[in-house]
Length: 448
Image 1 (cartoon, rainbow, N blue to C red):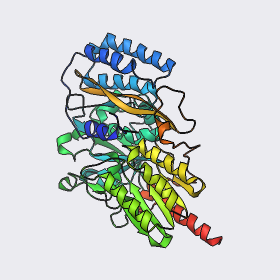
Image 2 (image 1 turned 135 degrees about the horizontal axis):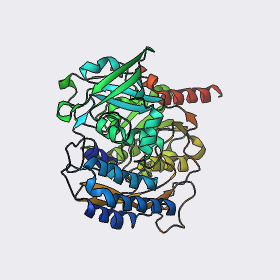
Image 3 (image 1 turned 120 degrees about the vertical axis):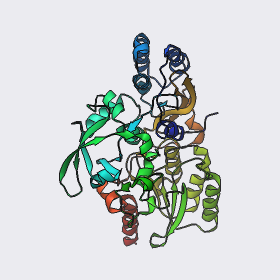
């Protein structure tokens, strides 16, 4: 059974980014029949026009499938699922499917104001913190245009969900971005304003640190395999803002005495790597029931989803017990159950809730609650999303309506205080979101 508001990202990045290997040559005809019967015929996420286009592309793919490489087949299937224009519709890879054998010895983050080099091998340490103006002459806007063709949803979501492809010249070459499949030429602007062009050769994946979820690149500590290979990271280790502290903890609570507030952070909405969400929710609930703070800051900026029922009642408890201001920190990684959690608190707290940050990673209407349709020859799986959410208008008239049962409708989740974390903020160890909360509370206090 699908989890409520389940995010595909746990499975997506375990299979897509961390696993490497090359798919064996395969006859994809059987996979295409499954794609037609178990995905397109069953998915309600496509508009009638998009479904016609998807079937036309599938027919074209059937005529050329035996001539495609595993990478070309993966991208062709991705172009079909992207027509649903639904963030949860993704193509997931496995050990048997195409996976990069070469990657760049860099790791990048796509911020609100551009792409930055976040982590690097020793030979490229001088590029740390630099913004990528172009890859083989293609600016970020051209990259996003290419990614729209293989992943539905919003640009905010694509900035991180397809981040792994930024490090694969082979994939970028197949998408028409990179000139060669084994290297790229980057034009970059360093933090001091100087410009540099650098041709970066891709390396075998066994010579690089293991892949991780893209939000881990934000942290100011060495990730798995980095220290052994001499990698460095751009963010300052001596100025770590609260939201990036304790990277090994998925769920966190901390008092903010200067603000008379309690800080609660969810980096997921489900059990993660030995960290169970239910005990944390119980801990926060006990604190609110026995010793409620004056104000509360809920940080959902890295909450990529899971199960919205895990903390649904907690959102209602926050609204009921916190007498003062409630702030919800949002970002483009806020997705699926993370969005549903934000909506639940906005719905319950109403005028006492202030949304801070940037646009979340999806629209207010989406399809989720997926089942998997797996394609055995290629090793790919596609998600069949049959549960409809519409936080703004409701969806009771649709036979696939799912989200209405939780009563979390909202008019909007656009931030009341626009405070994205930009490249310069991250490099300086600044949190514009929490700073905006602090300034807002000071303004309220000055009026009394």
